[in-house]
Length: 129
Image 1 (cartoon, rainbow, N blue to C red):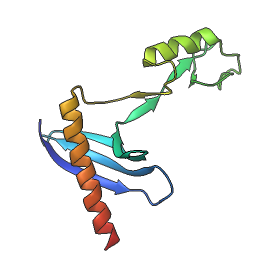
Image 2 (tube, rainbow, N blue to C red; image 1 turned 180 degrees about the horizontal axis):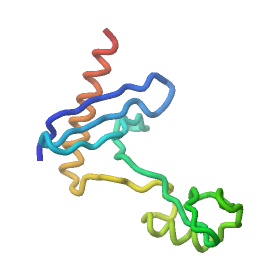
Image 3 (tube, helix red, strand yellow; image 1 turned 30 degrees about the vertical axis):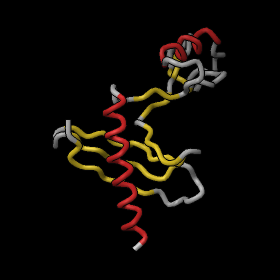
Image 4 (cartoon, rainbow, N blue to C red; image 1 turned 135 degrees about the vertical axis):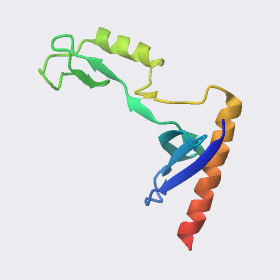
């Protein structure tokens, strides 16, 4: 699988960890948007697009944010057992987000990260001019 295009949208806030968003096209056929370029303690890395994990209200079924104590629809109390089930479905005891798309192999992850970070550095250089 070839990465045929990488588009970068720089973020203006220099003091924040989020530096940019990337849109990556694979084989001129498939696009993944909202890959984040983040400044970590040991340098730049990418984070794949994700969504917040939600859990249903046992009373009305409305999907609420993971850490909610009360339902946003019916104001009923949210039980800890429904939260635990939602957390287990997300795959981590502390995760509030679940990846929408992600590389399966380490080799492809490194390839993707290298291409996105190269495009980020190039776009950052173009913006400085």
